[in-house]
Each structure stands twice: as C-alpha cells, then as structure tokens.
Length: 250
Image (tube, rainbow, N blue to C red):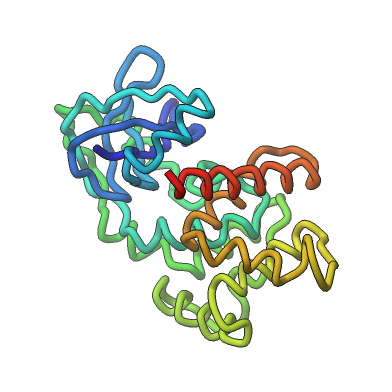
C-alpha cells in the first residue's frame, strides 16, 4: 500500500498538497483523480512513500487519509522535474503548489483542470517537459515578487535539469556530502552559531546521518511552509526529526 502526496488542480489553480493511499502503482509526475470536496478532481502526484512506514506518523498526528478510488492515470511531468522543485523549495518562500502555478503555463493548467476519466486532454507533454528546465524554473521564480535566492540559476548557463544536479553536486563537494551541505544550509537558515554541542555542525550531522536525505529536505520544507516565525519553524523541524527517529526504532 502506498501513501501518495498529491496537489489537486481546482478552478485552474494548484491547491495545497493532500495525502491519499492506494494499492495501485502510480508514478510521481502523473495526473490522477482524487476526491476534492465532493467530486474527483485532477491532481498531480509529487511524492509516493510506503504507507506502512508512515503509519505511526499519521496516527500520532491524527491525520486521516482517503483512498484514491479511480485507476485513471496520465503521465505529465518527468520525475526529475519534481525532484528539482523539491530541491529548490527550501531556498524559496514559495509553497510547492505555488511553484507549479508559477512555472506551468495557464493554458495547460486549464486543460488539466478539465480532465476526467472520459476526456483526452490536449496537452503536448513532450513540449512541456522540454520547457521546464532548471534555468526556466529558476528564472520564473526570480522574476516573481517573493524573495528567492538567485543562485537557483547562477551564471553557469544551465540548460537541463540533469546539468543542474551535476553542478549542484560539484558545489557541495567541499562539504563532503549532501548531508554536510544540508547541515550547513539549515544551520545558517536557523541562525545557529554554536561551535560545539547543541546547534553545532556536528550536532546536526549526528542526527542527519540516521535520516534519509530526502526526508530532511521534506521536513525542512514543511517547517518553512508553516508560515510561523523562524524560531517556531525550527521547533517544528526538530520535532519532525525526532518523530522520524522514533518511528525508525519501531
């Protein structure tokens, strides 16, 4: 059984993410039909996890999830595009649904909005995937009003998602690993300056080495999306880290 995070498209807008479960093997980047209000609406899958591994988290937070009762699936975006958006998310002040709203053309969103089990949407998916390069996504966010780090794009002339990822790895090599980079980024974000003990670089790494990199990105992103002051975001982030470690012991 899978735990599936989707972003519903309703009234030509990407809505807040919602969790569902399904035994069907859907793919990240696909459009599926999920219950939104009283009707099934098209939704973009952005993440898939094992429901069994997340049961404790869902129960402890009293999160109720519904089943996806439709087998409809339309492949829309490449998985690497979704991964790239998750990577840049902590470096922006956008929610993930806001990023998709900014970078996907309105005409395509309108076509997605019409999807049901009987329609054959007029979407050139090949052209869409070619359009959504790292360079294009970064520039679209930089042009918007919300603060965003301009090094999302930099001056390296990135043309493809894959080239951005390889460039990112080179940048992080001086910090030895992705988790070292994350520890440095998150410490700076929360204003941590301790050289030893709680809040130090070693303190962060001690926790991060026991947690998958993608989960760290996710918890940081979710803390930022809470819109609380930064100190409260920090508490939320560490609470999520603690819950993950508790779940891992079970």
